[in-house]
Image (cartoon, rainbow, N blue to C red):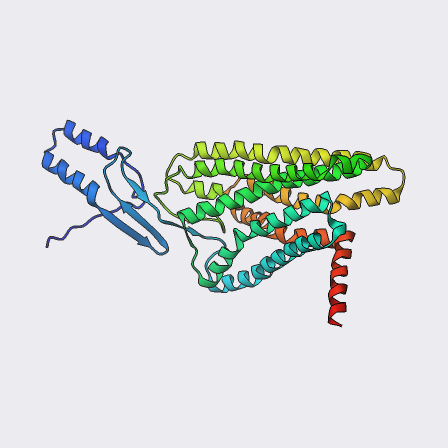
Length: 376
């Protein structure tokens, strides 16, 4: 058996070439058809798997108009590294965060359903937010916790796209839902006499549905662009979950259209709800400052302070991640800021709304007393 040696330039190995262009050039140069047929046979029948540590790429050569395309079967989410000691520490940190987030949001949902005094528009929107936060954090943390235990940082391409789809859907929906909650607070403080008439059950349902549908449509369009990308090179994503830009950055396709569409739709998706939120609080501030009584001012501020803290945390971390330029020195900071709006915000929301809200605390103490009496 003859010995064959091949030298591979790994900087160029993942490039795509147009096979038919090569064949046409060889024919034009008068190359013997025997060699051309041999080359075509290699293109049509060769399958190579390249493994370098955790990098696994299947390279298939086949005849088609677009030329060769290597196919990446999975991605590696680099996250915060793969050292055993670090994984254990992160697991110990993030498991309580996930547990508290799920328990806190489910507690708020239960209290609002059980207590008749909480059956009003403000708590209707709060239940929607708690449902959203429960789903939102569950798209990222369970898989991340599993990777801390097993050390397996791989995720299939379609698993990655599905994770991004639901993450983006819930994130976009939260922007709209926070805006609707701001509008609710505006009506409650600035138009108290007409509040019950204006913010009726039908309008509440319409606003909630608008939030969910807007988030769904926005991210469905963005994900459809992501599905058009081809991944034929290095498959390491320098993030702890599948976000649009880190995924697009490792594509071998032209990502300019995807990034442009994402930017435009992102502005359209977050811009209007952000402006509604800001406008609502400007009006609230203007009306509250006109109140002569300090006690009345404090009461008015207390009704919206919890929501204002949540809005500040959410939008502040999002702006730091997506607006601050992603240069090499800020990559780790981007990951840290991403933790704020993907992990910490869903955990802090129930704490903020329960600890700073008298009605929620009263409902909680009422449930505790009721169960204590049953036990005794």
